[in-house]
Image 1 (cartoon, helix red, strand yellow):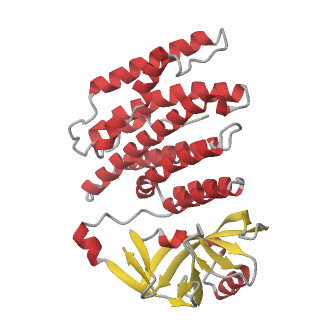
Image 2 (image 1 turned 60 degrees about the horizontal axis):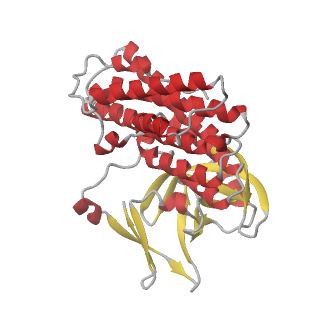
Image 3 (image 1 turned 30 degrees about the horizontal axis):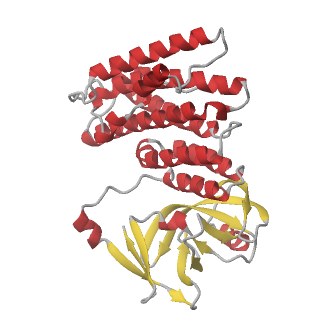
Length: 379
Protein backbone atom coordinates (compact mmCIF):
# COMPACT_ATOMS: atom_id res chain seq x y z
CA UNK A 1 0.00 0.00 0.00
CA UNK A 2 1.53 3.31 -1.10
CA UNK A 3 0.70 6.10 1.33
CA UNK A 4 2.15 9.52 0.67
CA UNK A 5 3.83 11.09 3.68
CA UNK A 6 3.98 14.77 4.50
CA UNK A 7 7.59 15.21 5.46
CA UNK A 8 8.16 18.55 3.69
CA UNK A 9 5.20 20.38 5.10
CA UNK A 10 6.51 21.48 8.46
CA UNK A 11 8.08 24.36 6.51
CA UNK A 12 4.85 25.65 4.96
CA UNK A 13 4.08 29.31 5.72
CA UNK A 14 7.24 30.18 7.57
CA UNK A 15 5.93 33.75 7.77
CA UNK A 16 3.08 32.68 10.06
CA UNK A 17 3.76 32.72 13.77
CA UNK A 18 3.99 29.30 15.38
CA UNK A 19 2.04 28.36 18.48
CA UNK A 20 3.13 26.39 21.52
CA UNK A 21 3.23 22.65 20.90
CA UNK A 22 0.44 20.60 22.46
CA UNK A 23 1.80 17.14 21.63
CA UNK A 24 4.48 16.31 24.18
CA UNK A 25 7.84 15.82 22.39
CA UNK A 26 8.52 12.86 24.68
CA UNK A 27 5.41 11.21 23.22
CA UNK A 28 6.87 11.45 19.71
CA UNK A 29 10.19 10.12 20.98
CA UNK A 30 8.38 7.12 22.47
CA UNK A 31 6.49 6.55 19.20
CA UNK A 32 9.73 6.68 17.20
CA UNK A 33 11.38 4.17 19.52
CA UNK A 34 8.40 1.81 19.55
CA UNK A 35 8.14 1.86 15.76
CA UNK A 36 11.87 1.20 15.43
CA UNK A 37 11.69 -1.74 17.86
CA UNK A 38 8.69 -3.16 16.02
CA UNK A 39 10.36 -2.91 12.60
CA UNK A 40 13.45 -4.62 14.01
CA UNK A 41 11.24 -7.49 15.19
CA UNK A 42 9.47 -7.60 11.83
CA UNK A 43 12.78 -7.77 9.95
CA UNK A 44 13.95 -10.66 12.12
CA UNK A 45 10.62 -12.42 11.64
CA UNK A 46 11.11 -12.58 7.87
CA UNK A 47 13.45 -15.50 8.44
CA UNK A 48 10.74 -17.48 10.19
CA UNK A 49 7.77 -16.13 8.24
CA UNK A 50 5.97 -15.25 11.48
CA UNK A 51 4.81 -11.64 11.61
CA UNK A 52 4.83 -9.98 15.05
CA UNK A 53 1.26 -10.16 16.37
CA UNK A 54 -0.52 -8.11 18.99
CA UNK A 55 -1.28 -11.33 20.88
CA UNK A 56 2.38 -11.14 21.99
CA UNK A 57 2.34 -8.80 25.04
CA UNK A 58 5.62 -7.16 24.02
CA UNK A 59 4.34 -6.47 20.50
CA UNK A 60 1.02 -5.26 21.88
CA UNK A 61 2.83 -2.64 23.95
CA UNK A 62 4.71 -1.39 20.88
CA UNK A 63 1.53 -1.19 18.79
CA UNK A 64 -0.30 0.62 21.58
CA UNK A 65 2.44 3.24 21.71
CA UNK A 66 2.35 3.86 17.94
CA UNK A 67 -1.39 3.54 17.29
CA UNK A 68 -2.91 5.18 20.39
CA UNK A 69 -4.21 8.58 19.21
CA UNK A 70 -5.94 9.54 22.44
CA UNK A 71 -3.72 12.64 22.66
CA UNK A 72 -5.58 14.06 19.66
CA UNK A 73 -9.03 14.00 21.27
CA UNK A 74 -8.52 17.25 23.16
CA UNK A 75 -8.95 19.68 20.25
CA UNK A 76 -7.15 20.88 17.15
CA UNK A 77 -3.34 20.77 17.46
CA UNK A 78 -1.53 24.09 16.86
CA UNK A 79 0.38 24.75 13.68
CA UNK A 80 3.66 24.21 15.56
CA UNK A 81 2.70 20.55 15.95
CA UNK A 82 2.57 19.85 12.21
CA UNK A 83 6.08 18.37 12.11
CA UNK A 84 5.28 16.06 15.03
CA UNK A 85 2.07 14.91 13.38
CA UNK A 86 3.97 14.18 10.18
CA UNK A 87 6.55 12.13 12.10
CA UNK A 88 3.78 10.25 13.90
CA UNK A 89 1.96 9.46 10.66
CA UNK A 90 5.15 8.14 9.08
CA UNK A 91 5.62 5.69 11.98
CA UNK A 92 2.00 4.54 11.81
CA UNK A 93 2.34 3.89 8.08
CA UNK A 94 5.64 2.04 8.45
CA UNK A 95 4.13 -0.35 10.99
CA UNK A 96 0.87 -0.75 9.08
CA UNK A 97 2.68 -1.67 5.87
CA UNK A 98 4.15 -4.73 7.59
CA UNK A 99 0.68 -6.18 8.15
CA UNK A 100 -0.67 -5.18 4.76
CA UNK A 101 2.27 -6.83 3.02
CA UNK A 102 1.85 -9.96 5.14
CA UNK A 103 -1.87 -10.13 4.35
CA UNK A 104 -1.28 -9.72 0.63
CA UNK A 105 1.35 -12.43 0.71
CA UNK A 106 -1.34 -14.93 1.77
CA UNK A 107 -4.11 -13.20 -0.26
CA UNK A 108 -6.13 -12.59 2.91
CA UNK A 109 -5.86 -9.32 4.82
CA UNK A 110 -8.42 -10.65 7.25
CA UNK A 111 -5.73 -12.78 8.88
CA UNK A 112 -4.23 -9.55 10.20
CA UNK A 113 -7.54 -7.70 10.48
CA UNK A 114 -7.04 -6.70 14.13
CA UNK A 115 -3.70 -5.03 13.52
CA UNK A 116 -4.66 -3.49 10.17
CA UNK A 117 -7.84 -2.11 11.72
CA UNK A 118 -5.85 -0.31 14.39
CA UNK A 119 -3.47 1.00 11.74
CA UNK A 120 -6.31 2.40 9.61
CA UNK A 121 -7.99 4.10 12.56
CA UNK A 122 -4.74 5.64 13.77
CA UNK A 123 -3.78 6.88 10.30
CA UNK A 124 -7.18 8.51 9.80
CA UNK A 125 -7.01 10.18 13.22
CA UNK A 126 -3.60 11.73 12.51
CA UNK A 127 -4.62 12.77 8.99
CA UNK A 128 -7.67 14.48 10.51
CA UNK A 129 -5.44 16.28 12.99
CA UNK A 130 -3.19 17.46 10.17
CA UNK A 131 -6.10 18.82 8.13
CA UNK A 132 -7.66 20.49 11.19
CA UNK A 133 -4.30 22.06 12.03
CA UNK A 134 -3.89 23.51 8.54
CA UNK A 135 -7.52 24.65 8.26
CA UNK A 136 -7.28 26.45 11.61
CA UNK A 137 -4.16 28.26 10.40
CA UNK A 138 -5.91 29.33 7.20
CA UNK A 139 -8.84 30.71 9.17
CA UNK A 140 -6.62 32.43 11.73
CA UNK A 141 -4.61 34.31 9.07
CA UNK A 142 -7.08 35.26 6.34
CA UNK A 143 -5.00 38.24 5.20
CA UNK A 144 -1.72 36.37 4.68
CA UNK A 145 -0.60 36.08 1.08
CA UNK A 146 1.34 32.87 0.49
CA UNK A 147 4.36 32.86 -1.74
CA UNK A 148 4.18 30.74 -4.90
CA UNK A 149 6.41 28.19 -3.18
CA UNK A 150 4.12 27.93 -0.17
CA UNK A 151 1.06 27.78 -2.39
CA UNK A 152 2.66 24.84 -4.17
CA UNK A 153 3.43 23.15 -0.85
CA UNK A 154 -0.15 23.61 0.30
CA UNK A 155 -1.42 22.08 -2.95
CA UNK A 156 0.98 19.16 -2.50
CA UNK A 157 -0.23 18.64 1.06
CA UNK A 158 -3.85 18.53 -0.08
CA UNK A 159 -2.92 16.08 -2.84
CA UNK A 160 -1.04 13.88 -0.35
CA UNK A 161 -4.00 13.78 2.04
CA UNK A 162 -6.33 12.95 -0.86
CA UNK A 163 -4.10 10.11 -2.03
CA UNK A 164 -3.73 8.72 1.49
CA UNK A 165 -7.47 8.67 2.18
CA UNK A 166 -8.14 7.33 -1.32
CA UNK A 167 -5.80 4.43 -0.74
CA UNK A 168 -7.51 3.74 2.58
CA UNK A 169 -10.80 3.43 0.68
CA UNK A 170 -9.14 1.17 -1.91
CA UNK A 171 -7.82 -1.00 0.92
CA UNK A 172 -11.40 -1.93 1.84
CA UNK A 173 -11.65 -3.83 -1.46
CA UNK A 174 -8.90 -6.25 -0.42
CA UNK A 175 -9.74 -9.95 0.04
CA UNK A 176 -10.47 -11.33 3.50
CA UNK A 177 -11.81 -8.20 5.17
CA UNK A 178 -15.22 -8.85 6.72
CA UNK A 179 -18.22 -6.59 6.17
CA UNK A 180 -18.29 -5.63 9.85
CA UNK A 181 -14.58 -4.78 9.76
CA UNK A 182 -15.08 -2.46 6.79
CA UNK A 183 -18.19 -0.91 8.33
CA UNK A 184 -16.30 0.02 11.51
CA UNK A 185 -13.51 1.72 9.52
CA UNK A 186 -15.98 3.57 7.29
CA UNK A 187 -17.60 4.91 10.46
CA UNK A 188 -14.24 6.27 11.58
CA UNK A 189 -13.75 7.99 8.23
CA UNK A 190 -17.29 9.44 8.35
CA UNK A 191 -16.31 11.16 11.60
CA UNK A 192 -13.24 12.64 9.87
CA UNK A 193 -15.11 13.63 6.69
CA UNK A 194 -16.07 17.16 7.86
CA UNK A 195 -12.38 17.95 8.46
CA UNK A 196 -11.46 16.65 5.00
CA UNK A 197 -14.32 18.58 3.40
CA UNK A 198 -13.11 21.83 4.97
CA UNK A 199 -9.51 21.36 3.80
CA UNK A 200 -9.57 19.65 0.39
CA UNK A 201 -10.54 21.22 -2.91
CA UNK A 202 -13.88 20.38 -4.60
CA UNK A 203 -12.00 18.37 -7.22
CA UNK A 204 -10.18 16.31 -4.58
CA UNK A 205 -13.41 15.69 -2.69
CA UNK A 206 -15.02 14.57 -5.95
CA UNK A 207 -12.23 12.00 -6.42
CA UNK A 208 -12.82 10.57 -2.96
CA UNK A 209 -16.60 10.52 -3.47
CA UNK A 210 -16.16 8.64 -6.75
CA UNK A 211 -13.96 6.03 -5.06
CA UNK A 212 -16.49 5.64 -2.26
CA UNK A 213 -19.43 5.25 -4.63
CA UNK A 214 -17.58 2.74 -6.82
CA UNK A 215 -16.86 0.68 -3.72
CA UNK A 216 -20.50 0.91 -2.63
CA UNK A 217 -21.64 -0.32 -6.04
CA UNK A 218 -19.38 -3.37 -5.78
CA UNK A 219 -20.68 -4.43 -2.34
CA UNK A 220 -23.73 -6.65 -1.89
CA UNK A 221 -24.36 -5.88 1.76
CA UNK A 222 -27.14 -3.26 1.78
CA UNK A 223 -26.37 -1.69 5.19
CA UNK A 224 -22.72 -1.28 4.21
CA UNK A 225 -23.74 0.31 0.91
CA UNK A 226 -25.86 2.73 2.92
CA UNK A 227 -23.04 3.71 5.25
CA UNK A 228 -20.71 4.22 2.28
CA UNK A 229 -23.33 6.52 0.78
CA UNK A 230 -23.31 8.43 4.07
CA UNK A 231 -19.54 8.80 3.73
CA UNK A 232 -19.98 10.12 0.18
CA UNK A 233 -22.46 12.69 1.49
CA UNK A 234 -19.98 13.75 4.17
CA UNK A 235 -17.35 14.32 1.48
CA UNK A 236 -19.68 16.46 -0.61
CA UNK A 237 -19.05 19.86 0.98
CA UNK A 238 -17.78 21.43 4.20
CA UNK A 239 -20.35 21.55 6.99
CA UNK A 240 -21.52 24.93 8.27
CA UNK A 241 -19.80 26.30 11.38
CA UNK A 242 -21.28 24.94 14.59
CA UNK A 243 -23.86 27.30 16.01
CA UNK A 244 -24.25 28.16 19.67
CA UNK A 245 -27.30 26.54 21.32
CA UNK A 246 -29.32 29.77 21.17
CA UNK A 247 -28.47 30.21 17.48
CA UNK A 248 -29.37 26.61 16.72
CA UNK A 249 -32.78 27.04 18.33
CA UNK A 250 -33.36 30.25 16.40
CA UNK A 251 -32.48 28.40 13.19
CA UNK A 252 -35.29 25.88 13.60
CA UNK A 253 -37.96 25.99 10.91
CA UNK A 254 -40.91 23.95 9.69
CA UNK A 255 -41.70 22.67 6.22
CA UNK A 256 -45.32 21.76 5.53
CA UNK A 257 -45.93 18.21 4.27
CA UNK A 258 -48.78 16.69 2.27
CA UNK A 259 -50.10 13.43 3.70
CA UNK A 260 -52.21 10.65 2.24
CA UNK A 261 -52.38 8.84 5.57
CA UNK A 262 -49.50 6.51 4.69
CA UNK A 263 -46.70 8.77 3.48
CA UNK A 264 -45.56 12.40 3.32
CA UNK A 265 -44.72 14.37 0.19
CA UNK A 266 -43.56 17.89 -0.61
CA UNK A 267 -42.58 20.00 -3.64
CA UNK A 268 -38.88 20.28 -4.47
CA UNK A 269 -37.25 22.55 -7.04
CA UNK A 270 -34.23 20.88 -8.68
CA UNK A 271 -31.16 22.90 -9.72
CA UNK A 272 -33.25 26.03 -10.08
CA UNK A 273 -35.43 24.37 -12.69
CA UNK A 274 -38.52 22.19 -12.50
CA UNK A 275 -40.46 21.72 -9.27
CA UNK A 276 -41.47 18.11 -8.58
CA UNK A 277 -43.38 16.45 -5.74
CA UNK A 278 -41.15 14.02 -3.81
CA UNK A 279 -41.99 11.39 -1.22
CA UNK A 280 -40.12 12.03 2.02
CA UNK A 281 -38.28 8.76 2.72
CA UNK A 282 -35.79 8.67 5.58
CA UNK A 283 -35.19 5.00 4.80
CA UNK A 284 -33.59 5.89 1.45
CA UNK A 285 -29.87 6.58 1.83
CA UNK A 286 -29.90 9.08 -1.04
CA UNK A 287 -32.33 11.15 -3.08
CA UNK A 288 -33.85 9.17 -5.97
CA UNK A 289 -34.93 10.57 -9.34
CA UNK A 290 -36.69 8.54 -12.08
CA UNK A 291 -34.83 8.46 -15.39
CA UNK A 292 -37.65 10.16 -17.31
CA UNK A 293 -37.48 13.12 -14.93
CA UNK A 294 -33.70 13.25 -15.33
CA UNK A 295 -34.16 13.28 -19.11
CA UNK A 296 -36.56 16.21 -18.86
CA UNK A 297 -34.21 18.12 -16.56
CA UNK A 298 -31.29 17.41 -18.90
CA UNK A 299 -33.18 18.76 -21.91
CA UNK A 300 -33.98 21.94 -19.99
CA UNK A 301 -30.34 22.36 -18.94
CA UNK A 302 -31.06 21.94 -15.21
CA UNK A 303 -28.89 18.79 -15.19
CA UNK A 304 -25.66 18.68 -17.19
CA UNK A 305 -23.06 16.05 -18.02
CA UNK A 306 -20.83 17.51 -15.30
CA UNK A 307 -23.37 16.51 -12.64
CA UNK A 308 -22.85 12.78 -13.28
CA UNK A 309 -20.70 10.89 -10.76
CA UNK A 310 -20.65 7.63 -12.73
CA UNK A 311 -22.72 4.55 -13.48
CA UNK A 312 -23.35 1.88 -10.86
CA UNK A 313 -25.60 -1.09 -10.13
CA UNK A 314 -28.41 -0.38 -7.65
CA UNK A 315 -30.81 -2.74 -5.93
CA UNK A 316 -34.38 -1.46 -5.55
CA UNK A 317 -36.73 -2.32 -2.68
CA UNK A 318 -38.22 -5.23 -4.63
CA UNK A 319 -34.78 -6.86 -4.93
CA UNK A 320 -34.30 -6.16 -8.64
CA UNK A 321 -30.96 -4.85 -9.90
CA UNK A 322 -30.74 -1.84 -12.17
CA UNK A 323 -27.78 -0.15 -13.78
CA UNK A 324 -28.11 3.58 -13.44
CA UNK A 325 -26.33 6.87 -12.96
CA UNK A 326 -25.45 8.61 -9.74
CA UNK A 327 -25.72 12.41 -9.81
CA UNK A 328 -24.64 15.36 -7.71
CA UNK A 329 -27.63 17.72 -7.56
CA UNK A 330 -26.21 21.21 -7.23
CA UNK A 331 -29.26 22.71 -5.54
CA UNK A 332 -32.57 21.62 -4.03
CA UNK A 333 -35.08 24.25 -2.91
CA UNK A 334 -37.55 22.91 -0.36
CA UNK A 335 -40.04 24.96 1.63
CA UNK A 336 -37.99 28.15 1.37
CA UNK A 337 -34.73 26.39 2.23
CA UNK A 338 -31.87 25.76 -0.20
CA UNK A 339 -29.59 22.72 0.09
CA UNK A 340 -26.55 22.25 -2.15
CA UNK A 341 -24.49 19.29 -3.39
CA UNK A 342 -26.95 16.47 -2.77
CA UNK A 343 -26.16 12.96 -4.02
CA UNK A 344 -28.96 11.27 -5.99
CA UNK A 345 -29.49 7.92 -7.71
CA UNK A 346 -31.30 7.59 -11.03
CA UNK A 347 -34.04 4.95 -10.88
CA UNK A 348 -36.02 3.44 -13.78
CA UNK A 349 -38.60 5.60 -15.53
CA UNK A 350 -41.89 6.28 -13.72
CA UNK A 351 -40.33 5.49 -10.31
CA UNK A 352 -41.39 7.65 -7.38
CA UNK A 353 -39.04 10.58 -6.65
CA UNK A 354 -37.70 10.11 -3.12
CA UNK A 355 -36.20 12.69 -0.77
CA UNK A 356 -33.77 10.58 1.26
CA UNK A 357 -30.97 10.95 3.77
CA UNK A 358 -28.51 12.68 1.41
CA UNK A 359 -30.95 15.62 1.67
CA UNK A 360 -31.91 15.29 5.35
CA UNK A 361 -28.28 14.92 6.46
CA UNK A 362 -27.62 18.47 5.28
CA UNK A 363 -29.47 19.80 8.33
CA UNK A 364 -28.09 19.89 11.85
CA UNK A 365 -31.20 17.99 12.97
CA UNK A 366 -34.63 17.06 11.66
CA UNK A 367 -37.80 15.54 13.09
CA UNK A 368 -41.29 14.74 11.87
CA UNK A 369 -44.30 16.15 13.64
CA UNK A 370 -46.92 13.56 12.72
CA UNK A 371 -49.76 15.45 14.39
CA UNK A 372 -49.22 18.68 12.46
CA UNK A 373 -47.75 17.09 9.30
CA UNK A 374 -44.56 19.19 9.24
CA UNK A 375 -40.86 18.50 8.90
CA UNK A 376 -38.99 20.39 11.65
CA UNK A 377 -35.41 21.23 10.66
CA UNK A 378 -32.50 22.98 12.37
CA UNK A 379 -29.88 24.50 10.09
